[in-house]
Picture 1 (spheres, rainbow, N blue to C red):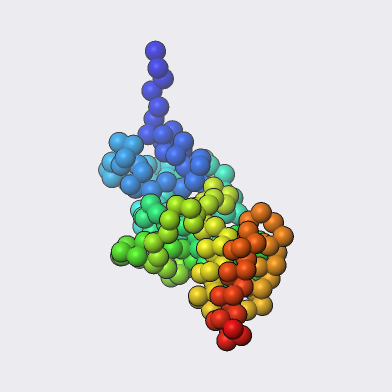
Picture 2: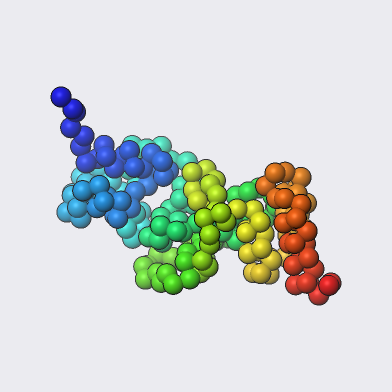
Length: 190
């Protein structure tokens, strides 16, 4: 006889792979309705942390929760960390962004409150331009550096990223050269 899993156990399973977070859409997809979510919050079994996002308190917090929250807050399945935040995530520069940068599809319009902590970018990204960092979707290194060049991130940080990533398998030589040329063109050195 199969064991019956409670709604909270089902939510906890989802949250384990998302830094303790679960969205309303994911709960609905799993058969847990709005009324049940409200009851779990009222009973202190879930914490509402943003519009459409809940924390399962039984899942330990991590230092990466804020980044997972930023991506889930958008409600967009294609959302990923990008630009300055992805540059920081890849640990290839000394950048320290004051807000979390997230990219969603060009046609995606976000109409939710609480986004003051985030910079939302609109760009259609191919699946090959995304990767994973700490269980959170993030732009790959070449895409990240290109985004940062186009967003006028200071040149010294871009050069640092090109140098550090160029010494790893994260950035192929051909991509490094192409991005260096793009940086020089941006800076008028071409």
